[in-house]
Amino acid sequence: MRIFVEAATGLPMILLTTAVIVVVCFWLLVAVGVVALDGFDADADPTAWGMGGVPVAVAVSVPVVLAWVFGVGATALLIALAPGGTAAWALRLAVAVGAPLVAWRLTRRFVRPLRRLFPDERGPSRPTSHDHAA
Image (cartoon, rainbow, N blue to C red; front, side, top):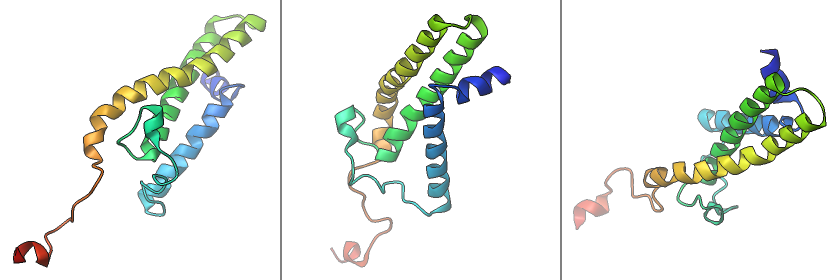
């Protein structure tokens, strides 16, 4: 457990740990109903990142969590297996840079099947009086 805490709170992984805390807080606010899931959709376009078709919150949350999982896992392995020193620090820095890149590639694959769950235009949730008149 000590190695996991050290990996999650040590430099440079503390940056991703902070991002995961922000993501978790955001999703808690969505669950409570304080924030809308598509609240950021007008502000950013995830299509440029290859993740179009899903809300921005999903396109940002998934790679952040995946990068954290990969990064902390790899850093914990490095702490347990690699001796300390400059080489170990260089490997930890490489993990901190590589984990978000791997997470981004995986997220692009995960997002494809999710696109059909988030249609561009939503129809009415129930029939209106205009639907019966036609």
